[in-house]
Length: 229
Image (cartoon, rainbow, N blue to C red; front, side):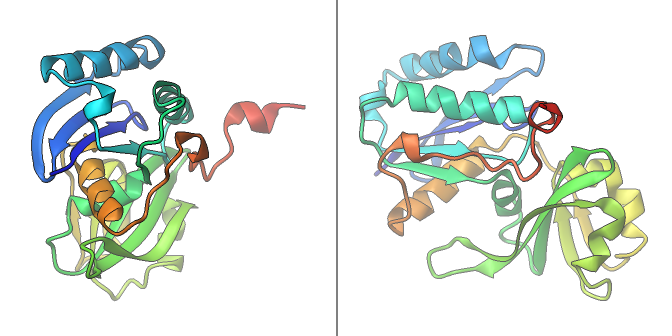
């Protein structure tokens, strides 16, 4: 049995989970009104202490690397890197799109997670079924596109399962071109899905041994970087 600690800080609906294989032992959800920089480490410490666990008891670490809020992604990665400094523990990066799609893994049809990227844009990818390992098969890699251009990548005659935060905001507009598709929203917390993807990847031998090798998935450059001259 593997004990998994998973963290998602890529949106305003942050969460931390501890699982024993598929069983969720504890989940902690952070309010968007609480500054992550000062609350994430105490929150992780709180959940571990309540389970009488330490970092040494964790077998696998799952972390969401984006896309999402730039500040949240940065804080999540830097926090985990700091807490694992000097320790060689299996770390599995998971994208937020993959986690959203995993919520719909039992549905029939291609799954298209959409995450609101603001400015009329969405982060998007596409998955189809699952491999022998249980992991979803990526058809379309993570990308950023204008909502009006989705049909450039997804044929309108096909049926899709659209999910994610972008569905809540753009369902009415997207559904005009995809009348036979399904639009499903869900609870926005992703840490449990991240833990299960991390477990599958670990069992498949796909993981990092050093948290310093973790890289964010931004897709769009942060505004601060774009405006820097």
